Length: 195
Image (cartoon, rainbow, N blue to C red):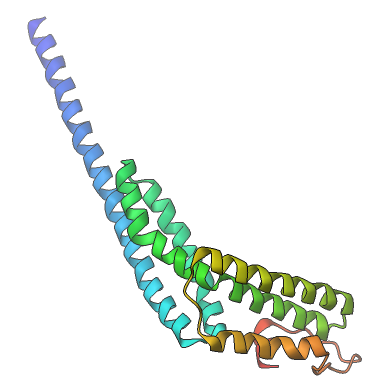
């Protein structure tokens, strides 16, 4: 009976040591995974910042969703790390700078996407949709100015606003090519960009 108790105690001790070792291993794995996704986010952020500084709104738009998706992945991975202070430090190191860069151009990307939608509506002859969306665009631009002032965001290169204006002016003035209505067609974003 004594041998049985000793073997049970030894078995339980071994299980406890194994569980402590395993939990530390899982913890280290979660930290490593968070750091790896965070480093990839910093890589994308570096590239995104270069694109912002280039002043090309179409390139910014092309990279915007990739950065946003990586921010979400990094946040989810950091959420699996144990310890509130560790998670907070990882968020500050990786996620916060990426969110600031994204928020710096969120309104310009939104304007471009709305302008593309307006262009599609104009080509399709949906005049009421064009009028409504142009009013929405004016509200978006006003809101952008207010938010950027309040948030102390760094200004975007002036070429971005010039590009947006060069798209907006023809739409507001109704000066754009409309294909022959007898020809059935559809248009995608790339074709609209080159149109």
